[in-house]
Amino acid sequence: MNKEFQIENNSIVIRGVIENSESRKLVILAHGFTGDLNGPDDLFKKLSEILQDLDYTVLRFSFWGTKPSSGEFEDMTVISETSDLEKIVAYANNLGYKEIWLLGESLWWTIIANAYCKSLKFMIFWYSAFELNDTDLNDIFLNPSAKKELSAKWYVSFKNYKVWKDFISEIPKLSVYNKLNEISCPVLLVHGDSDIEVPLAQSEKAYSLLVGKKELKIIHWAWHCFRNEHEEAIEITTNFIKKYL
Image (cartoon, rainbow, N blue to C red; front, side, top):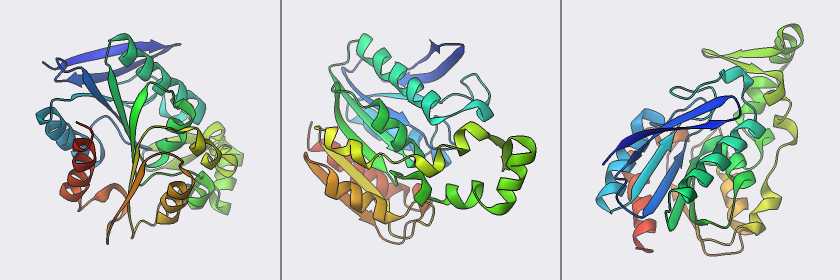
């Protein structure tokens, strides 16, 4: 059975969907910057179908400021998104799931690291950013033109979004490498070797710092978001999950 849900986080309503809710094993899918609960090019929806066939419940949701959740995107910060994810994990625990996996993509590893708790049994990271200053966000939001716009308007225009000063100010100083030794559960990292938005070197460094069971899988020629490698990314992910069925 599939059902929509919503939970309150201060003045914001986080909305999402729980699929195959009868299982007692849960996978939470956390989307990346400017993404949503469907994942890039519906990748989360495709992965969810496979996970349900493996008898997992799947929880997909949108962070603050991304539909169908409420709030304005320009008010989003790493702190606010961390709070959203903490609420989601607490909600899952309150529903009684005994085994909770967490899969995050891109930028939101920085959020996941801050929201990590011992109730998470496994973690999977796709093309994840562990240091924001070493990503394309630095080029987009901290170049001279962007700084000029930020000084005049307190935000920078990016695609159809306004990215506010509070988030941009976090980019130069946010690194979560020092949190990796706190993670004791098995971890899978998946990254493309042609990713120019978040360098593969970040996942390689993270892999070297993790202290528990860990795997690093590199998809050759893959760019950010695995645009042309959906099937390979899903196969790598589900093979990892099957090891712990």
